[in-house]
Length: 119
Image: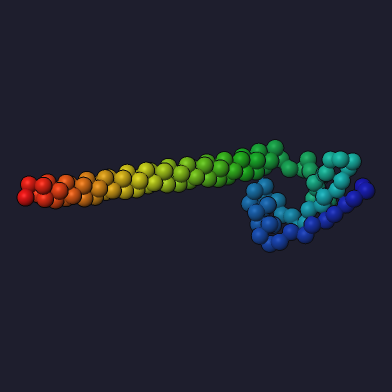
C-alpha cells in the first residue's frame, strides 16, 4: 500500500462505533489504492462485519440523517411562515391605524371649515 494512515480514535468515537456495529476498535486505518480510498481496521478485514451489523449501522445512520433533515426543513418552514404572518398582520394593523387617524384628522378639519363658513 502506497499511502497508509492510522487514526487513533477518541473514547467517544470508540463508544459510538461499539454502539453502532458492536465491535471494539482502537484505531482506523485509511489507505489509498489508486483513486479509491479504502477504509479498514487493523487486523480485521472490512468483510468481517456481519451483514446484520452493517445493515443495523446503515439503517441507524440513515434514520438519524432523515430525522435531522426533516426537523431542519420543518423548523425552517415554520419560521418562514411565522415571520410572514407576523409581518402581514403588522402591516395590516399599521395601515388600519394610519387610515383611522387620517380620517379622524380630515373629519376635524372639515368640521372646522364648515363651522367657519356658517358664521
